[in-house]
Image (cartoon, rainbow, N blue to C red; front, side, top):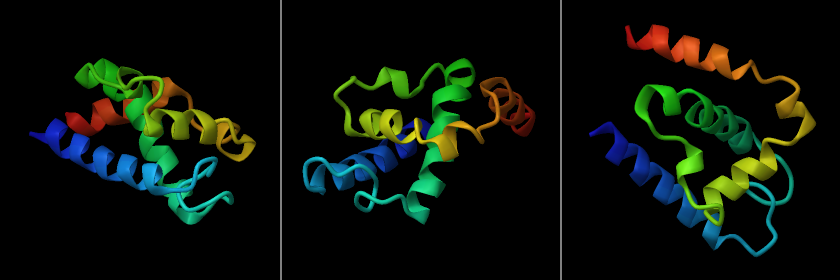
Amino acid sequence: DLLVTLQMALTRFRMHLFSLPIGTQYACGNALTLADCELLPALYVLQNATAPLKGWSLNNLPESDEIRQYYNRASTLPAFAQTCYPPNVALQGWTAARS
């Protein structure tokens, strides 16, 4: 099942975030890296397109979850927030990809 595969990948990322020193801002430290630039759009899609399509989003994670905290923190970066396509475009694209 794809949801199980996704949950396993999220668990691996969660464990990585948990292993970082307390107060670390991003996936590889306190400076934004290419890893963050690849992760954030994927998490954006999980947040905005999977809820209507699959009935699941990052909001299903507890507020204290490392992944949800990471996304909430990193998605406020101006470079990310100002360049994201609108949530309805994410949903439209993933809906078209599924048909």
